[in-house]
Every structure is written in C-alpha cells, then in structure tokens.
Length: 140
Image 1 (tube, rainbow, N blue to C red):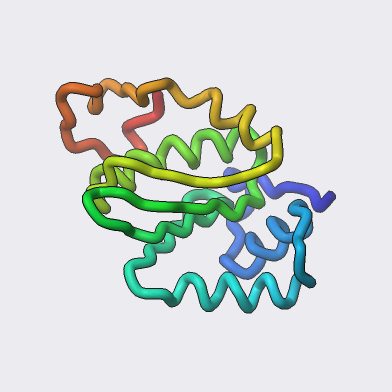
Image 2 (spheres, one colour):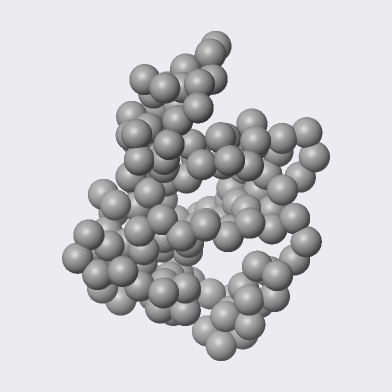
C-alpha cells in the first residue's frame, strides 16, 4: 500500500493522485491501462472533474439531477471524509445534482461514508430548505 499524502502539507496533481489511488486499489488491469482509461473517462461529455485536497472526484451527469461519481484518493482518511463532505455540497450547489451514486467494494470506504450525516444536514443546507453554501463553509 502506498502512503497517503496529507493535503494540508502537500498538494498533489491529478496524475500523482491517480497513481497513488491505483496503487491502493485492486485493479483488474495494469496501472498504465487504468490511467489511460481514466483519462478517456474524464474527457467524456457531461463529465465534471473536481479536485478537493488530494482527492479527485469524477462526476458523470445524468438526467433529472442525478449523477454517478467516483473518487480517486491519495489523501489521509480524515481529509478524504472532509473532502467528500465538501464535494457533496459542490455537487448540489454548483452542479445541481440532487442524487449522487457511487460504487465501491472496499469496506474501508464504506466506513468513511458512514461519517456523513443521513440526510446530509448542515447549517446552510437542511433537507427542507436548501440555501447557497460554499464548500468551505459546509462541514457538517
């Protein structure tokens, strides 16, 4: 397992994040093919790429406010959770995504997502009254 890089101490670029994420994931293809695939994926229509800390979120926009996303993470676990919270707010407020879907098999990821409130409720955003919030202000 490759060491995670604390984004509060060092910012990585897309290629570095993807490389670390691939090292820490059981891939069904060689790493160089995974990178080629992800580069093709981020260039698809209706795809948004957002880096928060040392996590890259790739969103495929669907219809009616729905989106499928994946995260390539090279950040610490605590930062990954914080980055994910910020991303949910970004997806809602900037991309108008009402439903985010992802798929993963690593139980450690599931443990991280259990830390997100259900439903996600912040001071600026509750389930009945959505108010504009910035990603930095909406840490629940």
